[in-house]
Amino acid sequence: MNRRKFQWNEAVDHLHGRCERLSAFIHEFGKQRLPLRREGSLFAALSRAVAYQQLSGKAAGTIHGRFLDLFPGREPDPALLVTMPVEQLRAVGLSQAKSLSIQDL
Image (cartoon, rainbow, N blue to C red):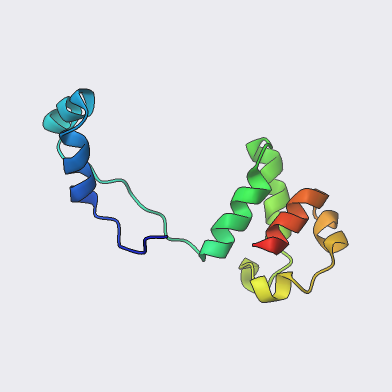
């Protein structure tokens, strides 16, 4: 994986020169920036993504909240997670497959 930092202006310039529709948008609105959320760790973001897969937002939010309650400070800890039995993860509402997937992260 390329670990080079994402260069926003470089990406916009690339799209500006290759897509007529985006070029018109960029010309009209300028180089808009997208707000980036930098909350928690990459592990927390990935475990949240797995928990939310194929569920309604409300159900996923409830299950994910219960999952977070398993950790001190509600911050998922990979070292602690791998020591948890799958049954403990299942008890908060995660499926067998999601429990195993999160432990494999």
